[in-house]
Image 1 (tube, one colour):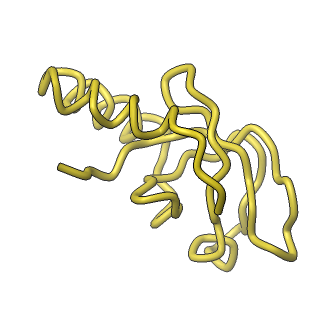
Image 2 (cartoon, rainbow, N blue to C red):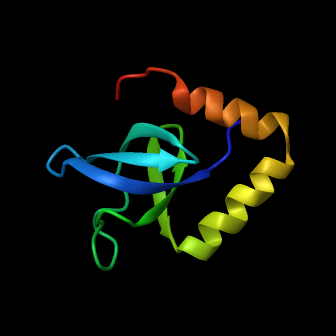
Length: 92
C-alpha cells in the first residue's frame, strides 16, 4: 500500500529542477516538489508537504502533518512499510 506521508522540507536542493530534501519522521529523502512550488507563498524550508511516490503532492500545515503521521503510525506495518520505502536509495 502506498500512502501520502507528511514530510518537512529541510533543504531546497535545486529550485530549477524542483528538488528538495524532506524529513519524514527522521528519514531524509530527496523528492520532486514541482507540483507545490507554485502554491501560494511558494515553498520554503520548514514547510510541510504530503509525499506520494517521491513527489510532494500538496502543502499542509504542521497540525495536519502531525495528525496524519500519528494516524499512519497507528496502522502499524503500513507505517513501517512507508518508512522502509522512503529509506530506499532511489534516484529521481
